[in-house]
Length: 384
Image 1 (cartoon, one colour):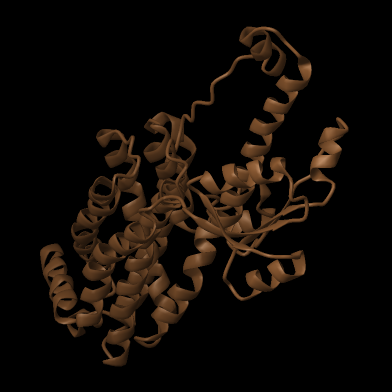
Image 2 (cartoon, rainbow, N blue to C red):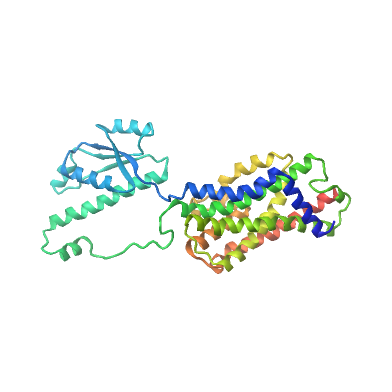
């Protein structure tokens, strides 16, 4: 079979198999839309909090009013004790407690430090962040106001110098919205491409084995164990996959962020050059991985099991420096690791290709290594 015959044969196999079509087309198109829609709000709002006020003072009421006025939290419940408030959190009615002890205003009146306790449900990072940051911000504002009253300055300028001797402005450089979607979704989107390829190619291999074809290749290849035939077969299959997933990559990296308004600071030429080795590495990696797939259904169990760990060890949801060395070594085996790191910087930080040279070169190494392994696998299959 010629090179073009292999391309047509692989495309026919994909079109005829509903399961492969699901993983090659529906999954890369639908999953990014679903994930982006879920995280489109970026931040949580009106997180329910329980108020426990044992102080019953004007200061505690002022603090609670400012706390409740924040867009991130809401004082949805009042309780007589911390234990009663904890039971509300246990039932899922609230996610945090704002507690004023009985000596809160007394200590401030004595010019001592007043204490406000904040208890948060740590099961959800976003709710904890909203409650804690709101309490911290209000504490800082009210502390500044109390300090100004005690200083006894005569002008507003004196108050500004006393409470804020160094003028500064907080200007977020990257992820200006502070949203979870802009933070996590770029990594998820490119990981979907690798996992979809693993699922589709693995299912094709498992199906052909079940049909007792010559190790995932057409019957016409039996006995043809020349290197030329192996190269032609590998090139034809790879081309068919690249034709499909080059469109899917453009969809997840350019179209989806534009639809949902996510931060996208990519430069088209650099992004194209960066994705070429990633797509090739994923294709060759999927072909090598398909050797382990004996039955059609096996691939779904393996890929679903590995998807979340691959996102974690990539360094996008947990600092790369805090990942144990063993797991960092494991992450280097997967093309998605380096693509996620590079794409996040290019998309969220406006990095150029030279700024992600380490990840770019690593992807080319993956392409060469997995390309050679895929050729060897193809040669052995044709011989069998």
